[in-house]
Image (cartoon, rainbow, N blue to C red; front, side):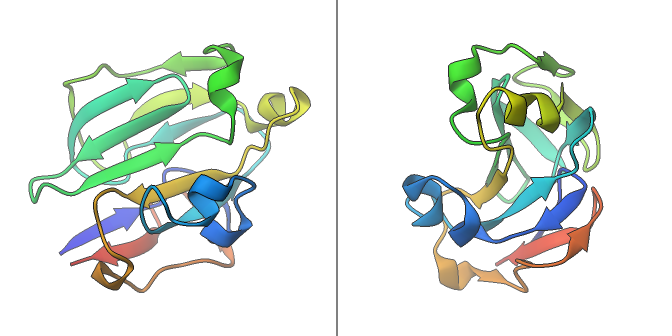
Length: 149
């Protein structure tokens, strides 16, 4: 089983609170979302694994069980063309849970007219594969968001 940790501090809100139908409808996959604190912060790896995809606004880490976890920093943030995001790791890097991957400021994203809410998605999973999904309450980076069988 894979335990997926929060990549950010803030408030767990659940996918249905993500202002994007692709995420809120779980079309990318099941998971939950984090409404981050509005301050510069490092988005950290939610699992131990290898970074298989890395963009300024999103990254995917695959663990030893082959579970890929997508962290998407805000909604429609690809339109910011990387502005306000600083990569702290590289595609292909082995990372540990809690290691910084992207530095960003959710307040700047919000000021640019984008939602800073961050979906954390279990790629190629079914909703039934997830348990103990956290979709409410304050969280800190490293708190468990869900377990993946």
